[in-house]
Image 1 (cartoon, rainbow, N blue to C red):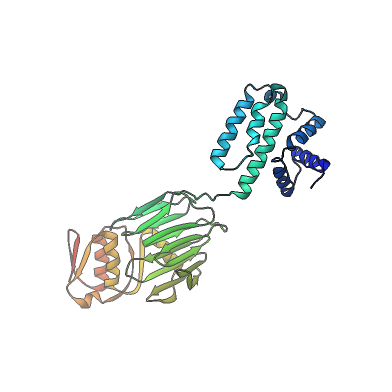
Image 2 (tube, rainbow, N blue to C red):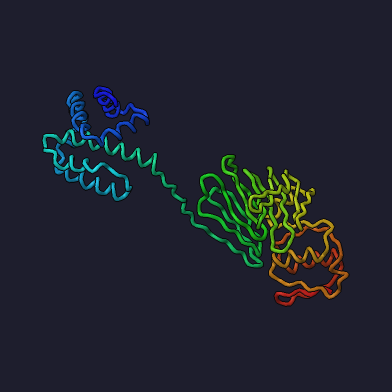
Length: 340
């Protein structure tokens, strides 16, 4: 049992704002006891009433307002303010309003401390999401909340928030896109493509992640980490630097070389192909131009070519370049191209 002088010392510390959490807990326990009001009043008399501004002393109906405040506080926080406190406030005479104000500050401080320390309730961030869907034949550029830029390809879908969470920047992609990510070492940028996660801090790279096709990640600048995440299991696929690409198919990851300039050129519609079959080349052009390219001779479709195409040119010009390279004839009829 603490002595009367020790209790007064605790009260003085509280009024001056110089107390420890342990001392505040002792004060909170003390105010529920019958003798607390008398000792508190004695300390106030010793220190004088200059602690309360005159505007608060003369404020009309202060005792009524304090009663309403405590009722509201109990409803909002479910914190049990001792029942005697509102009654003490309401029966004080005008001459004791100085004490009422100090007592109110004391109980409010104790209540807030108790609420924040013992009744913390996490608040879940409410974040709105957007989705950009490009049909075949359409490309778009999206600027994300952190100023990162996404060049979204045709037949692709991007799911992203209107603002990023406090510790990460996460989006989802289906299809293909080139990313120029604003550097932020404290908030990693993560792209979800099915179970595969591509994680960066600030760099530029391209992802191909079409459904039922091999996934690939190629890097133009910076460093990129690619993982397959299934539940609590993380399988590292690759850590890539500029000029590297990983292709993931049937649980197998293969890292190969790629020209970094060709990776970044994709966003400007420059498509480069090295020793690829004509069928592979035109299947990509089908997405870009929203057409169907039909082969009547399998031998032509299997021809290997190396070519660079400026894919924002009219389709007729693109097909002329391919015809001159692979030696075939073609006819464009609406959204269909017949190759012979």
